[in-house]
Amino acid sequence: MSASDVPISTLVADAGWFADCTATPIGGMGNNAVFRLDAAGRRYVLKRYFQHPGDPRDRFATERAFSTFLWEAGVRWTPEPLRWDAERRLGLFEYIPGQRPERATPELIDAALRFFRDANAHRRSEAARVLPLASEACFSIAAHLDRISRRVERLREIPTGSEIGARAAAFVAEELAPAWERILTRACA
Image 1 (spheres, one colour):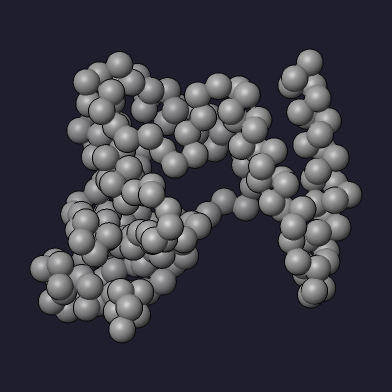
Image 2 (tube, rainbow, N blue to C red; image 1 turned 90 degrees about the horizontal axis):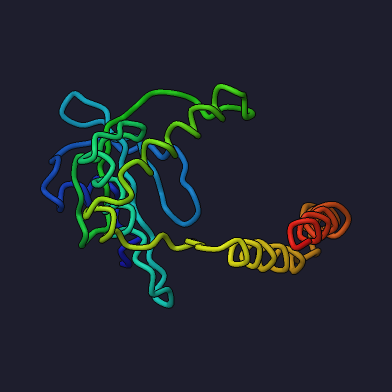
């Protein structure tokens, strides 16, 4: 049995956190899995971090360091990190009820800018200097433009064997790639 086949409740018990819990998938971003965890009369969020054997980046360690940094710096825009288990690649966070917004609003954009401001207010601290780099970190406009260009190129390779694949490939070819080329041309000018 691979590590990804082990039930979440078993991983949580093996970590010594809760002997009895209920884990309900609530989505994930990228390769990570996110669960609502009900245990000991409370609700939590559990994040299980994926690690591809061929990827040298340690996304678990990077997120752990950044989440811990924010809370130690007094920045309270993210759920509080409560426990970490590096062996099992688990992070336990406070649960904050809510729903994903359907669209960006001026208020949400303002909140994102305030988070950015608050997080960067501590960037010159010793704790910030030792943070690991994010997996997609770019430190120049050229690096950022190159990263997006590579992503658009990967999207041009969407298989067209299914209806949704054909529609996605058409969108990339007819709308996304031309729009990106216009943006790239303007940015480089």
